[in-house]
Image (tube, rainbow, N blue to C red; front, side, top):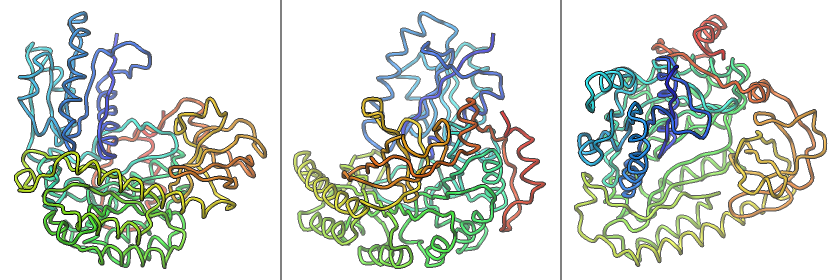
Length: 494
């Protein structure tokens, strides 16, 4: 009997996509995904180290699996990702029932490490300091039939004082444009309608092959790929944001009118202490240019509250930028000390109650702005990509959920002009009737419904499985039909 596996993912989109690669590698090695409620023969934790509670969460989950492993001695547990890269042998010391610990740079070695641990009957710890192979060369079992992640780079060259990621994922490594476009084309040939380009700093893309305008060119080339209807990207850094990217966003029809750009703080003094290499007015200037080019773009951000030494004046400066930028939404975080970062050693670590009070004020302001900006959309017609599992109350309200082109979540009434069954991956048009801070409501029903190949694939239980895409040439343009077809034949079909 083949062994079953389960991958449990924590953290950012990069980790989610890495888990797709891990699933692809394991399936290629003969493992099968556990689809039921049973504990799998292999449980893989793909961890995050950005927040302080990441450690407690991991070790708590490992503790709960200890009894399952005692009942099933053949069961294996593997821990990978950023926390594994950071803690290394500490994981096995604290949880000696773990079989394998692997880092962010050696995803493809997991099956070999599992076999070695089984043979030697002892834990295997392998943490590489740099990539042994680019993750795109590994197969991937995609989680969605209609939306896919595509990495344009891994690692980061920035030195933000609060961030531990560069030390765990290493310096930025860029994929060649032909490589990226071949993978995007392969997904589109499988019916995927929406692709999100991923990088720790996507608009620094091209640094390795000497083209500072490479990311804008890549966006335009994605516009030439047949069947690809939506392109998103995350996350850009304000320091590297160039006007040509804004032009590419505005002029390429399938690039969505959405921008997620981390602010972190509105205080120039705090930004300097964070080593963010831009200032508030520079950030607001980018926001202004984006809105001039795309008036209806939804702009979202990340903000850290309570960075060491943050004064009330600094915090008020952040509130001022939030008022001026009028973000559609914001991911807000209370500063979390991470050992190994310069900020952890800074003076002026703030009391929890001060940070909490400021955090609550920021949340209140942003919720007010989010509600106001959402109310401006009441009465407008939107195209929604029907989603799976987005609405927690949908079973009670009998609504369905979808994402608008600007990324906003819309709960809609599944009635009206519907052509047969409505499936995740289909496209519908409806009209916004009400607004809330974190979502929109469309109670008028569906005005138009388009069945898609992605919906067909979802209905039949198929998910794209992309083979590893080998490195391409540094050229731009949509991949040829031959290239897309050969990629699909290597393993895209299910």
